Amino acid sequence: MPTLASPSQMPDQTGRTVVVTGANSGIGRAAASAFAARGARVVLAVRDRDRGRAAAAAMDGAVEVRPLDLASLTSIRSFASGIDGTVDVLVNNAGTMTDTLRHTAAGFELQLGVNHLGHFALTNLLLDRITGRVVTATSTAHRSARIDFDDLQWEKRQYRPFGAYGQSKLANLLFTAELQRRLTAAGSRVVATSAHPGWASTGFRITSGNRLLDALAAFATPVLAHGPEGGALPTLLAATGDVPAGSLAGPSRFGGVRGPAAATEPTAGANDPDTAGRLWQVSEELTGIRFPLTSSAA
Image (cartoon, rainbow, N blue to C red; front, side):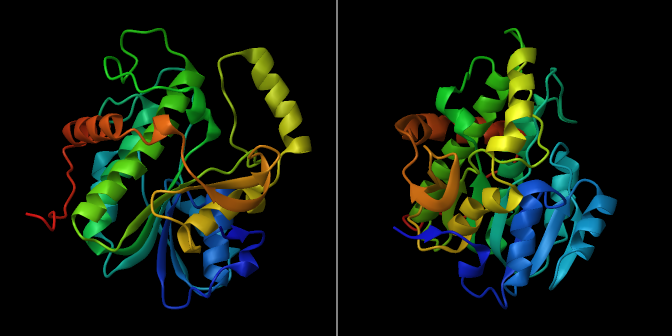
């Protein structure tokens, strides 16, 4: 199984177009910079255009900035309609974490709305132009999570920030599994993969809802975690490496905390076809956006 220890080990990306969401900081910025350095035309899909321009100015190569707010279906549709030509790789990297119950413009719980539903909508709106891979970022937080179909938006339960975050990250993996199933059924050559960064110090604030745990995480992260460049390696491997369809890339050392990126199998719960299929159906109903390709068996 291939590994990736440095962006310099990536294949040449000249002539390819890569879209990276949340590319103005952290892992998204590191991944976008690596793609551009290897010759790709990179589109930074960012909520804050000024921060995006600042990030682009620090990158070598062909980089452009386009506005995208994953908490707004209107913004997502506008972004997708503005993409001309083909996209070789879509990297669904952007994510959010909040310690209070907040909502998107459409009324979705914010973490599920941005981390999963926003990327679900974006992917399906772009899918007729994607030619290579869809890479979706997840987190090891998915391991203790479940999809509560009776209360996806946390309307009935007491809100648990880390529980909501974990649900959104599990949704990312289930989305990848079902997307790959549908791509295969449609006879598409596009491959869906996922990646998790391990323990990365990127400025992304952990908000579990427990002040002690949050304080410990804030103290330990700069000491024990790797930086954005290390955290981006799994994304780069998932996007360019010889990895299986539907695979999950992550750090290969210390139980998946850091080190060179390698591909692994998602957990059984993150690959359950019944749950993945049900989540896809619910996501279509919530967003009003459907899989655009026709099954080759039709």
